[in-house]
Length: 256
Image (cartoon, rainbow, N blue to C red):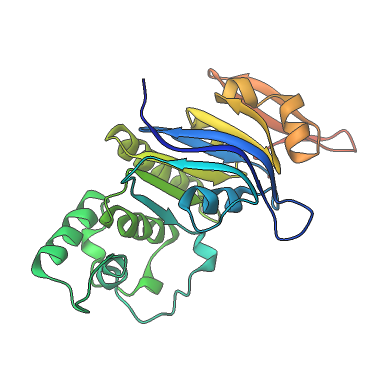
């Protein structure tokens, strides 16, 4: 039986009477790899904040296994890329519980190992604004890994990146997951990302469906999640979403 890291039961959250999340229940086990799918404003980022512990529910319960370390990678659009730091300095900023302002030799060695593992060791002294989108994402994953988490939370990790970078990030996360790291990420990219994950949770304030991509990427579930009718075909063993257009024209593309 898989050990439970974090579990939500009947969680409701909101700043006003209108909830952002309503009676959401989910369990994140050790080694999980889950994509949270939904449109903008559906509560995806709020759900990550609940899992992280930086937001407390209005109703419901949150259980966390004692000693579970959780790391969070925000959307890249929220970062000030002009901040004057190098890649190494940015990663070192994630150190927790340190009183000394300067890193130890052991900490610098650990950063070097993490950067090497993620394939960006050669960028250690580069300013963060000089990085490509994929390199930026790898740097923030390095920051997260430096805290030695059991659970990694990522908000829209492939937003704004090209197809090649998206595949690289997906493969990197798959490798980390196979090494034992549990991953929960949000996405509205159905064809490019969600269809390739082992487990999905469709969210629009409430949980619409949960299961494998084949089980939840269906016209009925997508319409209830995104509020628009979409067609789904099977291609090479997986679902592919086709947007519907009022004119009757159709184009194969990612929804979101």
